[in-house]
Amino acid sequence: MTMTRAKKYDAITHYLKKNNGSQVTLTFTQFDELLFPRSGLPLTARRDYDWWANDYRHPEKGAYGWLNANYEVVQVNLNKEYIVFNKLVKSNWLI
Image (cartoon, rainbow, N blue to C red; front, side, top):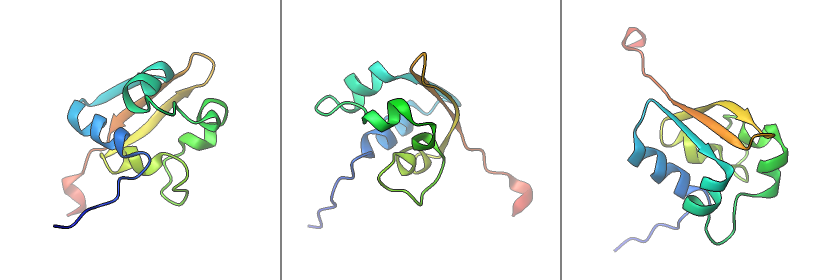
């Protein structure tokens, strides 16, 4: 039996895959209560727009969590504390 190590932001991946909406909005409170009940959303995510960049190169940030679920961040509002994700759409014309 092979065990895979859970990654810090797998909760985001699982939540978005389960939701499967074309657009998903999450408040920071929802992140704290639903996705990170033990630790809460990192403080840098609450203060730094760069934390929400759609960039795999920084695993300490959460991008792989939503990118692995085929979503991208399209809106960040640090003042009102919410994030909007859009489902990535694959184009057939590239095939």
